Amino acid sequence: MEQPTIIANRGEFVDALRALKRGHVLVHASESWGGCSIDGGAVGASFRTLADYALIDEYHNPHGFEHIHYYRLNQRGREFAERAVQAWERRPLIERLAARLLG
Image (cartoon, rainbow, N blue to C red; front, side):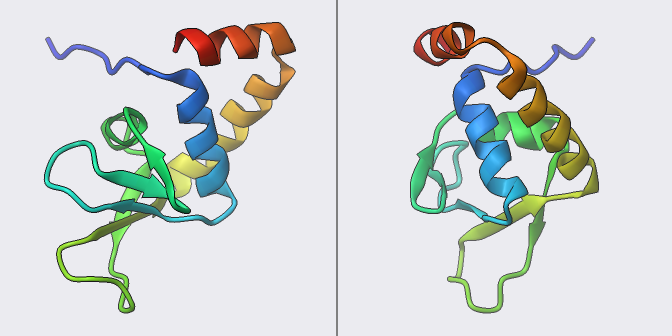
């Protein structure tokens, strides 16, 4: 049986969803799970979670660089991002702060 994907850093994950929902692009510049950024900000553990939950799709960027992969939210990802960001923002500030500090 396959293990479910764990969201290692919920704050980063919500930040990534929020940025992608606004139309930003996730750039993957490495063969490993690391080496990702959104709008210049480093993305650690969230890339794998976004990929495992099939929330992003790679797309061809004609203005991009060779061997660099570019991702956007797909329809499922946009719907998920809308619900997740709203749910995050409804949580008390102290709970969001704790999640950011503890992952």
